[in-house]
Length: 312
Length: 312
Image 1 (cartoon, rainbow over the protein chains, first blue to last red):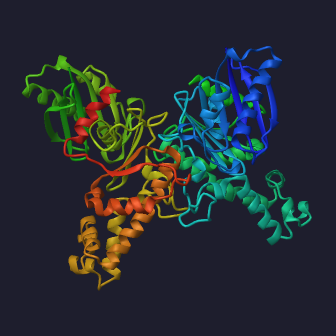
Image 2: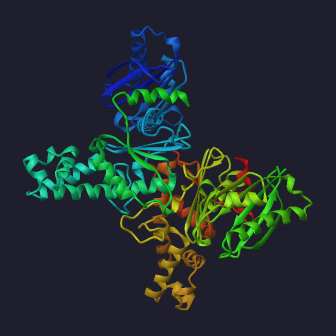
Image 3: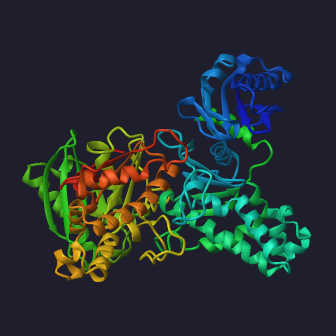
């Protein structure tokens, strides 16, 4: 038997099958076509699974379950994914019209955490947490091998813990969320301000003064070169991220906090700073708190992780 | 068979036995004597259990387990309880010298949450959270009927989620923790400032200008009378507590958040304000988030809840 996994993104539907050794045996990708009726998108998702299977000579009967990672949540199988314009789509029921097997749906960061638990940085954790630092901040929690998304499937939104009272407005409606200070977007905004306000900075030089050219990599590269201004941006960024780690350690006390998402491309340079800044944020002095590590992830993590939802 | 429960506090050791219907069948209380060698305190704890049993004619053989709630944590059975001057006491091992049955130790707020799960406000929750608003803020998390304290037993310290960047110094070493804004102590501090700074306030009048006389009840009583200044204190207090509820909803998405501790004595007056302030703090608009309720607790909740640790 095989577990099907679907990674639903704003651009592409990636789908594949995983065997009993958790190896991806086939995969395919088709455009999502955001804006189409959801029935068409779900049909395309099911067809992607079936066509990947067909190419390997796997019959639909050999598919035991379908796991789907979505850029949103799906309490009771009803999907809410703002960027897909989905505000209550019966995703589970619609998928079962095409593939009549158990369907598991979860947030893409939760799916990524499930992947890390089975094959990556959260392996062996009784409590594992993944923070994906990207356009926003996603959170994934795995407890005793099972994804944890709360009582209604709305939880593990760790980017929306408030860390600054009356802080910057967040797209979620609240103010001062971790996400508005410690996402890639937040870092880019800091870099842009630097280009505009600090004409002598290395970032200004690198972008030719065009603040729209700022990338997180550029900021980290300048910081690695020892540029004082870029270093202070990274420090300010880490200082805010630390508050998220503080909340996670004191509330959830995980074995491991894995750092994923685009920002984690800064590697050990960033990781070392996060670890150093987070020393002692857990309230019991001298106790062993979470190891902080880089996520392993990889290209097919979204598909494999989604398939793994069928394990629990 | 019976489950023994011990509620270890700074003043008293309360102990009792619970039968298979979770009814307290006997109890006793002895002074803690903080500062004595821990061996003496643990001996007194075990003796308290045995003497309560003896009075009911229950033999030591009929005790299936001992649960202990402590004002601290006990990773791997090693207790850390600052107010007891315990910085690594082998509590589990020491207790087993006297009562050779499985010993379960957890934080007193977690124990209170276990009680609420079995007999109170968290009944039937798949994810239940208790906030005890007292001298500090304690947190208790119950997931699928089991107390959740993280990978190392250091978690569910929900009072130490940071909500104000570079905020007020907390005793834990961090700044801006929820506890320094939304504990009873924080509310009292706000009331004291009012007595000092607002000679025309009802609080000033009630205390005769002696700020040391301020109690949370006094502040709530003035607010209930419609005193504008007291009302604004309550509002500011709730505005900060809301940030903790926001973090809890977005991270843990519980079925119920129960409000306990001394502050919860303010009853519906406070609860209504907390519920109103917390509307919409969960990031998915229109979705069902936690019910917020008053904890049930009661006098023997600490002993009964501790005994219930033996259930999981």
